[in-house]
Image (cartoon, rainbow, N blue to C red; front, top):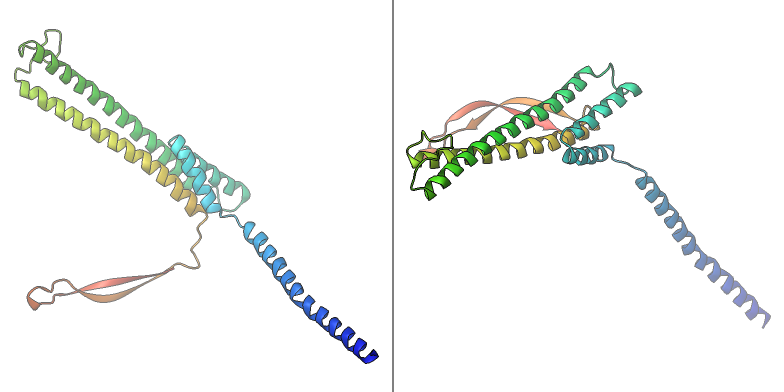
Length: 224
């Protein structure tokens, strides 16, 4: 009976020790997962963050994203992250802002002028349609005796308005894209990773009728 009691005590003690081992391993794994999560959560992609800020500001006010990039250059100069005073970068950014507003102003003025002339021709046509094709005595287009010329002029100014609006959209898009790319490239460093190699090669430029024309060329290989 005593022998059976000793055996049972030893069996339960062994079972308890074995049951505790997986719990310990699980605890270690949980702690490791928490550590990895904390480490990954601490990483901040500065380029992506700067790009989002630049896009948001450029969408609100054209040129505001470039002004933000100018501030980043000023901060780099003050902290000593770049050598010198960054005069070249500052001038380039100021030139972009000036270019955005010069282009926007000229296109806006062109739209106003074309819209004015379009309405002028349209008004003249509407008057002639209701007055037996007679020119408006108070208008400025009485020299156009041919009504078809008025239709042509109206179409030209309408087309000009559409082209100007598309150009304004392009300038606006370039403003946003430039602000984003400049902000992202500021935190992109590829000096140790980017490389290239140029080798002579030949290419076939014509394979018609079984005839191959061989042309010498240069092959550019980029290593990222």
